[in-house]
Length: 258
Image 1: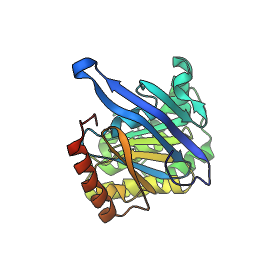
Image 2 (image 1 turned 90 degrees about the vertical axis):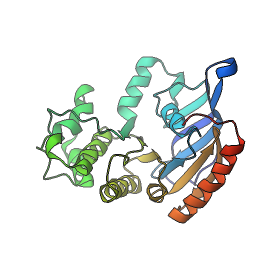
Image 3 (image 1 turned 45 degrees about the vertical axis):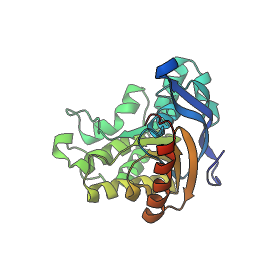
């Protein structure tokens, strides 16, 4: 496996993960025996050219899409060996999700949107933990506002808080700043970095933006469904240089799925 040392342990891992779409002439290998470790308390970024398999990797690790073969471990639990009910419970209790679309309920306040996962799971949220989450996302004075009364950045911060409220082991984020302006996006990225740095959850983010990637502790690069490189302590210049190399690799390969 690849990745940084994990002083806080391993939050998640993919082991020989393979995902194949179609058959015969339409067969596409989106992931080709990928193994990667996600350290606890780290912000891991996944990048690669279009068709490299990065979103497929995220979806398989987040228990949203079943791999063709291989294993996904969350807190040591083999996700795809579970039954559907147990896997649903694991997604609800141990994973958080932040996507490009905010997916907030327009008729609910920010507070109600944050608490929605716990409400659906019929779980009581410790008031102290809720206060800590709200303080982390800096929304204390906006909790009674509905999404239409919030800026794009505030709505995304509500989405991050909603992902945190169940105390997940891992937060999976797929292009979470794609609909935000650069200043607002930088605020959300700094928040995700702080969430990982404070040990609230490991963060795994897919992005195409070198600037966004520079907020991570490490960047995992994919091309043609395989891990081609890992860059610790990324900078914008370093990410751009690695992506250029990968584009050459992808141009010589057979493609994949993003």
